Image 1 (cartoon, rainbow, N blue to C red):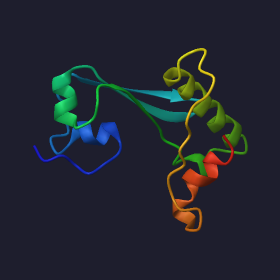
Image 2: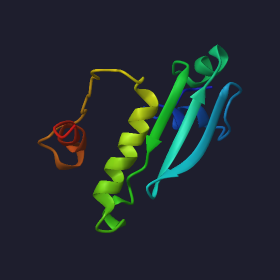
Image 3: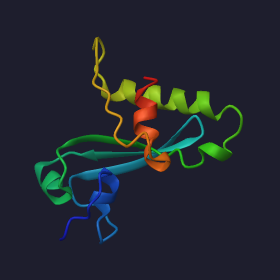
Image 4: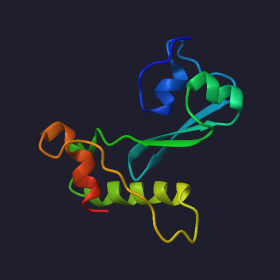
Length: 118
């Protein structure tokens, strides 16, 4: 199967077939009113099929942020914080934060601007 060009584990896992390969599990949940997709790649065969290392991948969808109400920002921050707690081991004293994008191009500035506030 030709691998789609994507950074999102769910998109890579679904591919053209629209079904998850063996060794890949997905579930959807909600955090503070925002949808979260969790993809677990649990086997080496699943990792090969998806083209991503084994592990847990979390995607927080903030597309509805602008219409989510006046309290959207603190809810989004809380959601991000809870997801980070799931992937950063307890007792960790530091973590690398990368804000990919170009701060001088408005649609691409989210990464660098978010990293400025972590």
